[in-house]
Structure formats: structure tokens, C-alpha cells
Length: 267
Image (cartoon, rainbow, N blue to C red):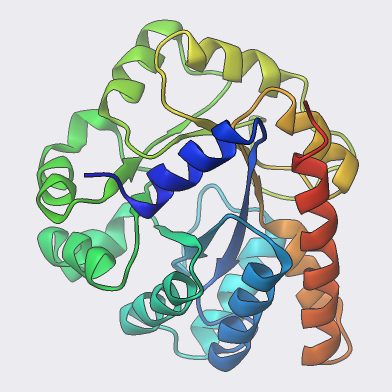
């Protein structure tokens, strides 16, 4: 059975364009502000939304997302709030997933976490620190709950390992375009297109590129070769620097509309 995320990529492929995927941590800039941001992003034209599970010891997140996670954690965000934000996103009609490190899943309960994703309308979970060798329980849980297990690959991933990882992946393959942590960059890594090409040699799954996109031109460039363009830090930075909640919401809405144009201009 296809998830809402699977259907998004079927639609964008039929339209010969990449999907725009927005990332925002649950509970940021506040619990109510997060709900408003999710709705603003959906109304502005994003195709899917990643809800970040704020975590105290992130290994992949750069300073911008770390700052947002700290604000969220100080606001008391917990698992229930993550699932609540996921439900808000799903109710807007866009495909929605959660991005989380493994520890919160194990603490919550592997089967219970996967089922809560499904129960709140989610399509899958991105697990950046979970290896396929340690995924047996998780893969069984996501299969039982009918959601996508989404793994992250990097420029350093060997061709042999790419084949093994993509064989276990559902929804899309998350291609981290640079070595290092998240964050908006002046230029998107040239490694990204090469990585996407290598991934596509191993699977017919969509390949989405994350890490670094912050402008319409960058979205256009990435959309020329990737199936999905993931943007997180650029939205978060706007919310962090806004003088008011409404100013921040207006800013992310304007950027999402620009990026939505960009992913339609890449081919």
C-alpha cells in the first residue's frame, strides 16, 4: 500500500519536477507557533513536511537547527508534541514524516513509535543515526505500521553500501549533499549531483537532497537532478531572526513560494 509520501513523488514525477520538502522542529518557535508555521508552509506550496524531533545531542544538525531544538526543549516539547505537530501537518493535506535520532524511538518503544506515526497520518521516519545492520526491529515495526523507513546516505558512502542501504529504504533516499552538519550555504555542494547519480544506479526510489538549500536558484539547481529538495535551516533562520511571530510566518511563507517556483524551473 502506498503512503501519502509515495503518492507525492508519483505526482511530481508526472509533472516532471522535484518535490519541495520543508523541515521544522516540533515545538519551534513555540508549540502554537510551530502549528502556524506548518500551516503557512503547506499553504505556500510545499509538497511534504519533515517534523524534527528535538534532541539534546544532535550529531547531524548545524548551529541553526541546534538553536531551534534548544528553544523547543526549553518549551517542554516531548513525544506527544511531536506527534501532535505531525497530525497538524498531515491534516493540511501534505505528506508528512518525522526526522529523529534513534534514542527517542527506543525510549518510546520501537513498535509504539512506528504505530504512532501511522496513527497521526505520517508517512515515514528519517533516522540519520540508524544503520541498516541495527535496523531489524525497526524494519519489522515500520512494515507492520505501513510507513516508510528513510535512510540517509552521504558522499562518503561506498557504492557497495549504497546498494545495501537503498534496498532497505522506503519513500525516498535522503542524500546529504555535503560532509558535515546542516545549515544554509552560499553554494550547494558539487558532490550532491554525483551522489544522486550514484544512488540512482542502485534504486528506482526517489532521491531527495538535503543540507544547504536556501534560495530559489539553489532549489532550481538541485531540482535539475534530484527528485526532492529539502530545506530546513533557511526557514528556521527566518523564524529565529524575525521581530515577531507574524513577521516570521510571513517570511517563511514568502521563501516557500519562491522555492516552490524554483523546483518547477529545474527541468
